[in-house]
Image: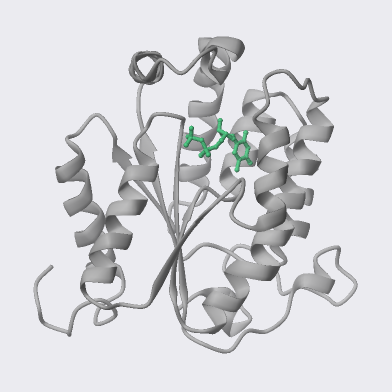
Length: 245
Ligand code: TYD
């Protein structure tokens, strides 16, 4: 059960009405769970999120697959701005746009779907902003966390899968895709080393909700690891109790 749904978060004190996150934070009825896939570009997280969605569909388990940036109609527009290499953005402007995307995502998609009791799979959420904009881009950790908290309004993932990959392998995979000057080429390996270190640091801090996966493994093997983890963490939710994953 999502701690937010019961009004308790193990990572944050209960929100007071006048906290910056107050207006977004409401008690939610229902038993939805939020599963987030994180990792660097080319780590295979989107494939894993899609494969899990297909598996849940096969079991007729009510679920929704979404993503950041761009999970909502407004978010799709923000995504175009964020990913346009011809449109330079000040780091703070980039951060605000990611957070604007997140506010829309949380308010209009994640919370309603969680309230409806669905299993929500999100391809990225706020850990990405700490890893990319703070560790990678150098914005203050406190500043990023404050905006993340405001956008999330107390929502915390039930489980985060971090698909971890050495930067050299990321570089190989991204260049192999060959779709023009990539973020990777523009930002360079040192940036991605910092992003990776950021993700691993977050996984250490939030170890109770984060599972680090070695993304050099075969995708089929990773898919099974993810499935087994979910069945173990949420007994009876996906398969009847006692049935093996
Ligand atoms: P994504 O769509 O996940 O890209 P990909 O499928 O290629 O991995 O994310 C687009 C880019 O946005 C990606 O380079 C990571 C970046 N990003 C941030 O820098 N900060 C954020 O908070 C988020 C959500 C994404």
